[in-house]
Amino acid sequence: MQKQDNNISFFGQELNLGIDVHKKQWRVTIMCGSKTLKQMSTNPSAGQLADYLKRNYPGSTYKAVYEAGFSGFTACRALNQADVKCIVVHPSDVPVTAKEKQQKTDSIDSKKLARCLTNNELVGIHIPDIQLEIDRALVRQRERIVKDIARIKNRVKSMLFQFGVDVPDQFTVSQTRSWSKRFTTWLLNIDGVTPSMSQVIGNYVQIGMQLRSQLLVLTKQVRALCLEERYANNMRLVTSIPGFGMMTSILFLTQIGDVHRFKNEDQMNSYIGLIPKMHGSGDRMKTGKITNRGRKGMKIDLIEISWKGIEKDPALKMKFDELIKTMTKNKAIIRIARKMLSRFRHVLIHQTEYVNAVIE
Image (cartoon, rainbow, N blue to C red):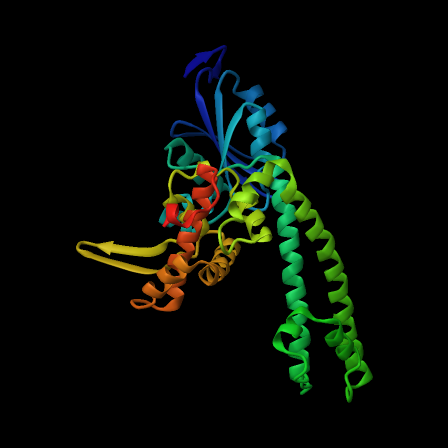
């Protein structure tokens, strides 16, 4: 850096910014090499931050990083458009010193990010395009409604059990799951319950009916999404895999996006969370349960898909039966889940429908 007109010139220098993102303000640390130039609070605006950098540090190149969270990727996209090269990192991937673990403030967090960016210790996560994010939001919206309906059903069942109301044998488990019209009618006209209890049950039923109406609308919208040009062909390929239905297929397609961003199966398994915890020292190596990191919802869905797959695919059932000779069923189904994910990746990369002989 050279002095110019009694001011320090940063022309040609690389400035690294660590941003601790909050809803009302950002805490920013600006570093040049190992030197901290400035720590400041600023409005949560990528445009204002970019203007400040260009006004105070003209001629420099700018790099920025913040942790993935509630704020999404809007700030990252805006910074990149304003010539500030920005990445978003997983919080667990940021190296932390013992002091930073014990003393956590916005200033410390932003400086930590700036330091790690300067030292090239960070790898950014994948930033999806805006349309893919919107498609994800629609699919997730439907998933949330499905879960809300399940919660309402469980609350009603718990209430009936709490007050000693027995469900008649004529309503089987499958009927209570789907809440047939007969079962709903029985709920609204249970003999021997107080008017106040009947009122509470009626409220639950009414909420459930409203949610079900919303689910019907969302299901139609997701089905329409599956038929759009950007998904139609891949939907055909993925649904050719035994176990993958329409809703699970579009869930995986919108969540994963471009399958080519994963260089191998291990990377995709790591993204979902189908890799085991490992601890090695010397000649010892201990393998534990699958890691807590990953896409929990996708992990659960993939395991459900795997149980369906072993029912529909004889080759998969044969592999499962072979595995349970040496391990529990729960461990075996994780192995099957990895195989199902391998099939998913295979059909998309090779753009060919699933053929058991090719993949097995």
